[in-house]
Length: 260
Image (cartoon, rainbow, N blue to C red):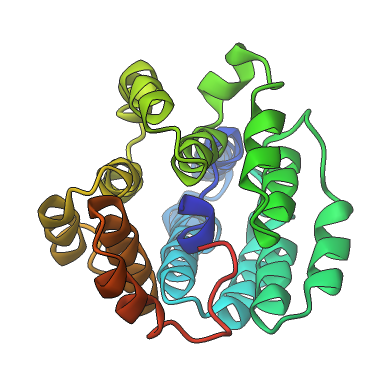
């Protein structure tokens, strides 16, 4: 699921504020020190806009490869340059994933417990991650069903958790109904990878292997072989090919992301 392979920040208000502040500062410098205004404005833009966005893409690449330790270090650096939009918590979330990957579940849960809340996006992400660390899909589904519809509509990560939990609990009718209901909202996500990832979940649980393979060969090609094999095995299971699924699952190392 998206939480297992990709860290995204849904709130962009911080970027808007930073961009506006840089433009105002640059305009003021053009008035007082026009000779260096362009240089300073460009430098501020590079440091506080370009560099964090580049770092964000690198974090997502590392997460896709399940290299959570390295991703956490880069995310911490980004949080110094851009502390808004949830980046304060991202390094700790990634550190928790790294610990979970090493089997340190108690330590990972302790980190996430500090952030869990139903009132914020990062808080809900923490709650969902705790459920996933223990593969408590039914509990996760029941918890999400207590979230107000207005909140769920605005939280992409939680929508993905909802669809995944429906698939994991074998409620395919519920999964397809939820996909039909929320697809227009999910399609508004500007990230094509995120859109195709959730599409892949639905296809995998429905046993559409050819379409899943196509996605992994195109827009989802950055994901690690572990993640690809897990979802291909899920597709085989949905088709009733248990032996083929088991062979793929045996290729997954024990230290893989426990939220697969």
